[in-house]
Image (cartoon, rainbow, N blue to C red):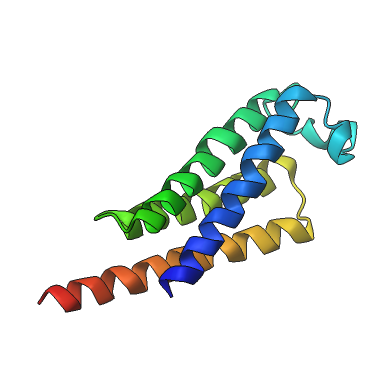
Length: 131
């Protein structure tokens, strides 16, 4: 389970960080073929700030979790659980703001939920091993 959790966190980091970077470099969204009216119901004028948030918060939390899992640190499962919650929150808020759902939203929501469930299971397993 720990290896799967590592792979999922690393996958999310390797998709969120470059995607966020590309949104910062191309804040008009054309690089991802986002329609211009997608941001109409959001507080954002362009994709620069969402790109920062995607890269640093979503991607950064998953990268920290993946590194922690790779190094087998004390708080690895807690960091992974946090990354899963952040991803779930990101998708939830994003779909509310843009008022639409794409299949990628569902895929990444499931990814975040899976990271969360695996993290919780591994935290419980680690607690039992210490008792």
